[in-house]
Image (cartoon, rainbow, N blue to C red; front, side, top):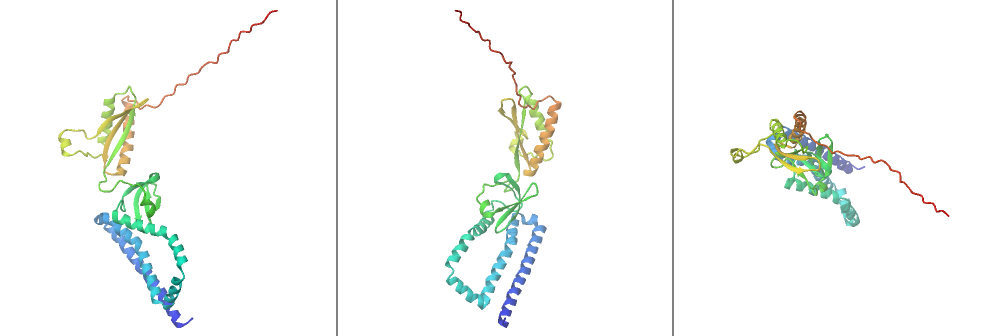
Length: 290
């Protein structure tokens, strides 16, 4: 090994070590800044998280091209390869199109912001959770079982997304409770309204005109006359998706207990079975007489 080759190897190793250290320092700095100033940064946290996750790729790409440019051997080798690498380039291009699709998808997410880091979103197959990271390749969603769902950017860009956090986090939750036909509808509505409006997570979302007109805080409507039940739907406002789930569970439990005390039946389907006795067929036999 010549002295010149040794110098080139040392140069390449040193450059890679330096870029690794710089990348580590920048990622640590951005992580610390995002954690300390999460409230102040707000929606811009998405940009910082995306930059943090992209910085390693960007720095290593720049460093590799710089090393190839600085070392004469790689320049000569590169020229020879490019002169006869048409087929190889086509193969590499075809193999990397998914990777480029993910990168473009990540950039589009950053620009158009259909969701941000920290938003609660729902994608296909009822996958719902918090957006934890947006990288050049994929998005990481932490679901309500604390599992990480990793979706490539090219796929999530084509999904229909329900975003529960964008613009306004308030949720209007629909709570449907069924009662029997012989139950008192007005009493059932009163009980539901009392339990909903006394819940600590309930929000009075009426405007000034509605308050002045003395409209109810909670609207409850009879929405269906079913085969064996009368369905009452309450339109309930609360702070966010998580609160909506807790409020619904609490209200359904407390309303059920109160219905039991006050004689309001929550019906269930009945099945009537008719048992028929098996009857023997009476046959008349006629004999011919000679």
